[in-house]
Structure formats: structure tokens, C-alpha cells
Amino acid sequence: MGQRNQDIIDALKQSHLFTSLTDNQLDRVYRHSQIVKLEEGQLLFAQGEAVTNFYMVLSGKIKLFRVSPDGQEKIIELVPQGEVFAEALMFMDQPHYPVSSAALSETMVLGIDAANFKAMLSDSVGTCLLLLGDMSFRLRKLINEINTLTLHSGTCRVANYLLQHAPDDQECFELEIAKGVIAARLSVKPETFSRIIKHLRGEGIISMDGSRITIHNRDALKALSLV
Image 1 (tube, rainbow, N blue to C red):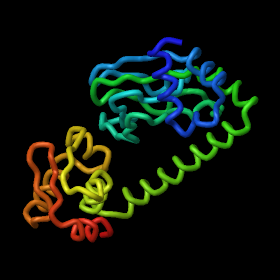
Image 2: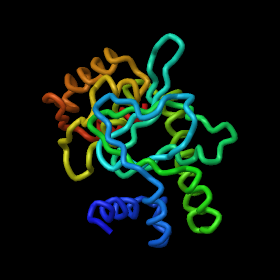
Image 3: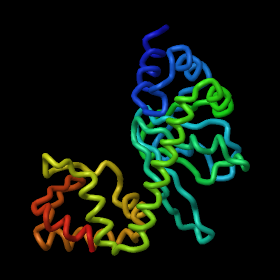
């Protein structure tokens, strides 16, 4: 097996969805997959297209989104390196992608043949349980996000986002995606996001230099995340 092939299989092993697969099963997944390279902004699949693959992000970051009738883009999820997405669609009666998917930067994904993987599940009870656990986790995550978006203020959402992306052992971190994308993910307008950031800076809770955020008062930010 070539080094590149082994690198991909090693990447698969890092995902909890594939951890219980045997070497033969991992090789089968690899043989029925393809690497897709995307430029920033390039579409991977569009809402309504037939489901053929599910995907794992090998590098970069993917956004899943829908566009409203009035042309507004709603970001459903941001998928980082190492994460799998669209796997639950293997079991839907209406096999079409319910969202669109595009690269937020130069991105490489592994497209895994959904029909072949589904057939392999019949031989692996452990993988079925892992997939069930994965979908349950995503469901809980989505319910929590819906609660946050519907029950909390814009300031609370921004504070939560900053805390989630700030390591506990350090106060400085980089915003890895554009502010407009973050605003769309939090369901606030870009100008609202900028106004909240300006307020947090004015209160001395954070400072910002380009895309670099420094948290000066984590306790205050945590208090705002509960409002």
C-alpha cells in the first residue's frame, strides 16, 4: 500500500465512525472512496442533488447551508478537519441532500460511497452502533443549537462562540473563518455581530487585532453567555 493510501486510512482511523472497522473493512472504505479538492467557495454538492457519497474533511473546513427564497444564506453547520458529514442520509427514504455544501478555504475531502458503506454495515454490528451513537450526538447538538438560537440573545450567542473557540489554558486565539460567516452561523446580521464585538471591546472583556481575539475577562464573558 502506498504512503498516500496509508495516510488516508490513518485519517479514517482517527474518526470515531471508523474506529471499530477491521483493516479489511478500512481498505474497502478506501477503495470505494475518492479524494475531492476544493478551492475556497467551491461547491461540493447542492441542495436537492441525489445522495451518492458521505464525506470526511481531510483538511480545511466545509460549510453546510441553505438559501432562503429571498436569497439569504443560512449556515447549518461548519465542519472542521477530521469530521464526517452527510452520513445519516444513507438511511433516508428521500435520498437527496437537504443542504448545500461548500469549502470555506482550500479544502480536501474524502467522498465515501454511501451505498457500499451501507451494505458493509450488515456485517458489522459495532459499526452500526457507532453510527447510531454518532447520529444521536448530532441530534443532541442540533437541539442545543436550536435552543441557543431561539432562546438566547445575540450577545449570548457571540459570547458562547468565543468561549467555545478559546482554549481554557490560553486567552488568545485566531478566528479561522470570516466574521460574516460567523455571523450567519449565529443567525445575527454582520452589523449586529460587529456591534456586539465593539461592545465587548469597550467593556474591556476582549480585544481584537485583525482576526486575533484576546479574552481579558473570561468570567464576564461566561456571564454574558448565560443571558
